[in-house]
Length: 129
Ligand SMILES: [Zn+2]
Ligand SMILES: [Zn+2]
Image 1 (cartoon, helix red, strand yellow):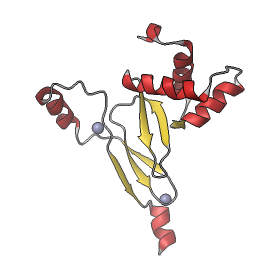
Image 2: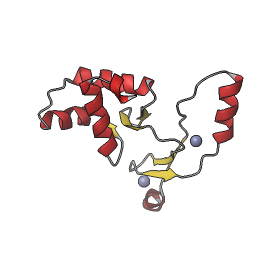
Image 3: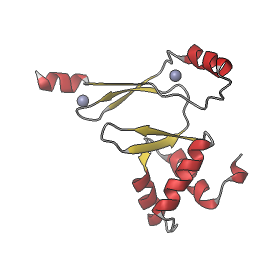
Image 4: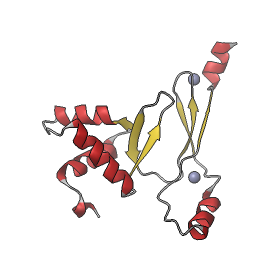
């Protein structure tokens, strides 16, 4: 599958593989540039867009409106604290069967789904009282 990728797409992908947390396009751009790989920001966006359509990479929209990118991870869901931005992963997928059902009923090849919960983490709840 990777043979079809261009050099810059491959570099973006390699970076996301090593990343321990989701990365913004701007950060990717700076990281690639610091490695001496002169990839333009527009190319980074284009690469991310293509990788997303290929189902290799997934984007998440943060509460601040910024998109962050990570390798496709199935059944990874999150609790996001709107106060401090902390992200707590949820291991179980409560909608796994729904995904299977939808892919059959709508003849839709589902790459992934997003299920997120927003609110306040324990620390922020305590700080707010
Ligand atoms: Zn799920
Ligand atoms: Zn918090």
